Image (cartoon, rainbow, N blue to C red):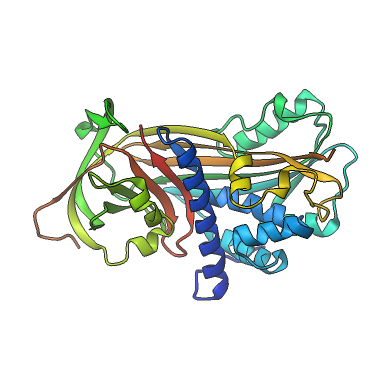
Length: 380
């Protein structure tokens, strides 16, 4: 039975959280730049854990590319850090649930190195499944796993076009989060109001309203607010760029929300925040390549510590976010498919924060600073 640990000042918390959040921020930046007028929603933690499992299987120059991109030492050092961090992050209370699942999928006749499999099971709680990638049931099995691991939020992560006769192995990760607000928005105050889009134009959204005390700060670039969840160490951070400022001025604020909120004080805030239903999915092949992991997708790929001859055929990510007056439900899945070679209140007047234009958001743990989910929201 695993022991739940509390965050401490030990170096592994700092190293793994810093690397995870920086890598996630780099992924978010790359995706947002590729789609400057679309919502982007990811789980940095899901993508990072998948990358760490791949790192365990890498050799040669592929190993060096992972080490440089993740800015971490060898897997044998980071695996215990991830294990301890996962033990801390996953917890459930009456108004709060976090679950993180991983799995290894073995094609027919595929044998993987025992050390790789043991590390995936012991450090990442990976389940093991045999599957026939040449059968339609493979798609059904993996999608069913994703649906079950995300409490029904994500029902599809792969389709039949993802697998070929050379498909041999896959790694999946899924994260599910549900929490109720510490102070719920009153549904009777929700009104239809305009949300101003990038460039020009607007769309009508259901805008939630509250007037309460929140940890809040602002600077020349943005208004930043911390929305706590009930009986939970997690919170949502909203970063609203000021008029004339862009995501580029503010995106570093969601790298570690705990640091970004340093110096913030409890203030009375008139907050308007849109209800959100956001679904996002993408290929991460070009993102991983742009972040320095180029070998993965070509004949020079070295995943010999999984099994010789593999290369990564695809990495896909999907996320779905729901925010309403009661709280937040959000989930994400990541899959790397591999084939044989050939992701107290202030007494001052209330501060007005109206989130009616593109904004950044993160869901983070107040203890470690770990970012589970982050997004650039252009049209809720």
